[in-house]
Structures are given as C-alpha cells and as structure tokens.
Amino acid sequence: MYINGVSVPLTLLGLLEREPSHGYDLKRDYDTYFGRGKQLPFGQVYSTLGRLARDGKVAGGRAEPGEGPDRKRYSITDAGRAEVDAWLADPVEPEPHLQTILFAKVTLALMLGKPAAAYLDRQRSAHIRRMHQLTELRRDGALVDVLLADHALFHLEADLRWIDLTSARLAELAAVVNPEGAPKQ
Image (cartoon, rainbow, N blue to C red; front, side, top):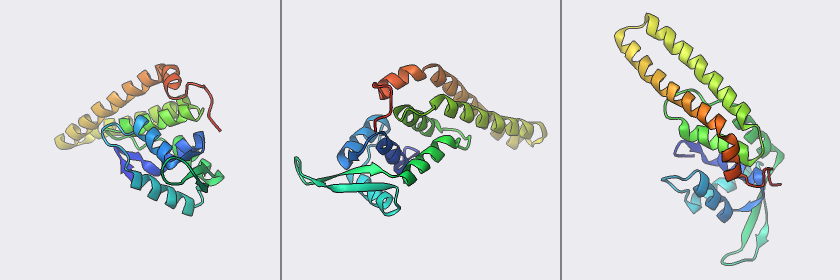
C-alpha cells in the first residue's frame, strides 16, 4: 500500500509514534506532509489502521463521542515502534526517483525526534556503493549497458545533491515539522 512511493502503513505508524491520534487527524497529517498531489482516502486510513491493529502494531481505544460519528484514538504499540525504527534505519535501495520516500523518512525522523542526519548518512553511503557498482558496469559493459548505467548514475548524483542539501537544512525542516523540538508522546 503505497501512495506516491510512500508506504502508508509505515507512515501512519510513524505519525502515531509522535502521538496517539484519531483516523481523521492521521489523514490530515498524512495529507499535509506526504500527500502532495494525491491525498490519502479515508477508507484507506481506516482499513490500514484495522490491519495494523490486527497485527498488534497499533491499539484502538474506546469510541469517543465528538462532532459526527464516534471516533477511536489509536496509539502505537511496542511492535509498531520496532517496525518504524527498523524502517527508518534501513536505507532505501538506491534507484532513481526515490525522493518521495527519502523525504518521508527524513520528515518522520524529525517529527519523532530521531536522528535524521544519521539516516541521511546511511542513505548517502548506500547511494555511493550503488554508484561504484554502476561505474564498474560502465568500464566493462556494452554500449547499451553503459548508457543505462549513465542514466542511473545521473539520477543517483541528483539524489546525493538532495541528500547534502537536506542535511544542511535539517534544523530548518525540523522547525517546520516539529516546532516543539521533541517527539510528542
């Protein structure tokens, strides 16, 4: 379940790690930070929360009265936290057009008060390893392979520039996505 290349379940878990929330609030936050061009449907929010609850990664509270239908406040479990931590720590396979996933991971790490700079460093290393592999392919490959490797290298170079720029602006981004400066519990 991906929208714009971003894992909906992992992103919702990350938002829940920040603070327990109602489905409506999760949708609003998802759309604000990650829904550029394609917002998350309400049905997908609640079906995802249902699967996460079934799998023991979130817990739904009792229905609370409010404006409109009764609402449940969801909170993340230890299993859900472990999954978010593993996802944030794992660099994305270096391929072209990963900016959406990279952005989501950096933003969530900052929202949660986690080490976004360390994530960017690991991602930079993964990109550099992939660039070395592609450079070897260029040395020994046929023309078609060389051209494909060049295409991938140019995209990875752009990602590296984005990683460097974002690393330099982490404090500014943190102020936007987590103005309190600490994860909400």
